[in-house]
Length: 75
Image 1: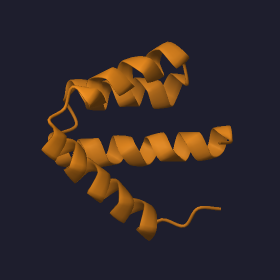
Image 2: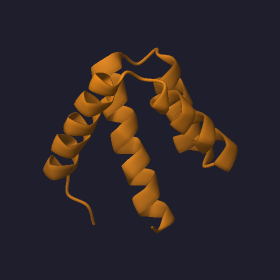
Image 3: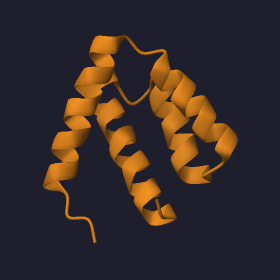
Image 4: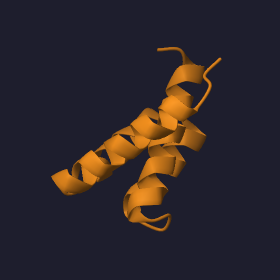
């Protein structure tokens, strides 16, 4: 994936997490940091935080991210 596509994907995931579990959660903070820095370490920490979420919550986040992505124009 190109950097721009990767950044957009993480931004959609961050928005979905914020919308579903809240903007002030550990995962939202970790994703925000990863999106801004692009650091591999920050990306690993964000993934670990996401993996810690309950499976049902992860599915809700996925569904919301898909809906956001389908509504977005990616150029």
